[in-house]
Image (tube, rainbow, N blue to C red):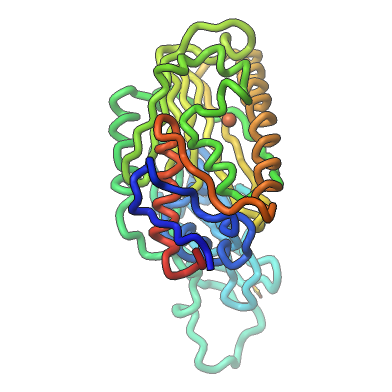
Length: 360
Ligand code: FES
Ligand SMILES: [Fe+2]
């Protein structure tokens, strides 16, 4: 059964992955293993993890993660799972601690993950504290971001990001940017619907985002696929209204990093979008907003409102698409050769890593 998704086809003959990949819990289970556990995942910001004892927690499709700056200054990542009964060590999104104390029965670990305190555990045989530290996870920093990798990384973060670090360096794109705000949106769609929407090469900009369309030179919109990344970029045309006031400079750059991270850059303005699956037909998209140091508060507020409006427009179509993907009438679709090379690049990667693990 199925249509046999073939990632080797040229774009002109390609089809999308089948609709069941957007609805089937077995596909999400395979993605948890073969997509999310085998890529670098954004879990926090460097500014949250500056001081010894500072920590962030994260959830990567059901894997609880804890990242801590140890007393020796080293950033360490752990599974946020106590060795005693698997309770989380910390439950807050971020904070500061001198030691890591499990809130269930009070076992304590130091900031390097070593088990130190085990109340009322005398007399337990064949139990060595040294074998019961917090299980480590690979962690890496890049620019304002902290990533983890749930399994042995196939490549270091910088290599994983391909052309992105060089591009950022060449344009000094992160220079002076400071984190200002976070917004989180829960959507009634599969996480891949949101990624597909992001990667359609501007195909929906004129139809879905009228205000944004006014500041982008759509004829010059370009999509470049390279390894784990897709760069969509467009020259900016000076526009009026809130979008025109807050989206300035020479270029709008929209970077996607396999599988679920987006980075949107304008002059002095950046937001990241992290797409977190919550179920086969639900996801959460977390926006973090960064601005050049000294950006006035009213500019920040207006810029966040512009992003919120664009997001509301995207949420609307994404949730409608999810309903359509549930229809008996739809299995796969075709790609625009002119616009949708980015979306097919994403589907090709999915097809390769999920081959043999899900039905096609
Ligand atoms: S689960 Fe952590 S101390 Fe019991
Ligand atoms: Fe959009």
